[in-house]
Length: 226
Image (cartoon, rainbow, N blue to C red; front, side):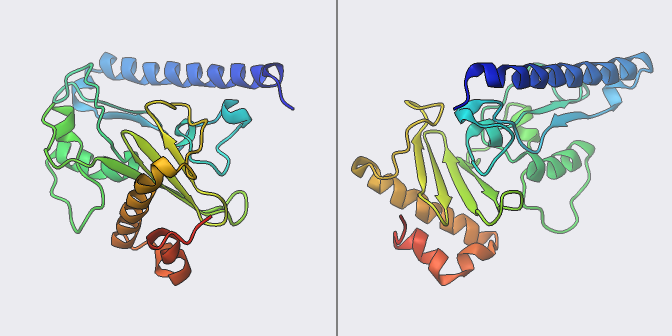
């Protein structure tokens, strides 16, 4: 049974790596300033996933969709158009939204269809009235075997569809660290039903083959789930 003394050396090294990355980014920004290119260079910092770093008594990314793993940083710097210090609280997809954002910043019209949305209006403080109110994240079991997950998260609830295990539901306002799974709480039945339907609609719209399977579809739409 792991104790803090087991995690502390790993966490210390993880924080050290973060400091190293911060320092490296600072070197890049300073170098751009030295050659008078800071205003003409878009600098983006993000990551593909977080690290549990002892959270939930786990390390690495594991087969979980806690915020420790899926809520990652996204920093965009371009003094020519974006004022410093802007903080965006709306839901974004880092990698899906980056391509249309960069094209928008450069005044380039996208060729073909893009799944993401430009973040430029958000960065300029002009939030579209129809901006997304939830996000979906997926895990396909590549690292730890066939353990497939889909997640739907809004500002209040997170629903995790574990196709071969017990589903998860977290009430994020009262339980921000996702410690109490309320999937079997009768008071949350309507929330679960609604979020399963919404998740199915998004996955079907985006062509996720998982919901093309009749048994998987019924897990979401008919509640045939643990």
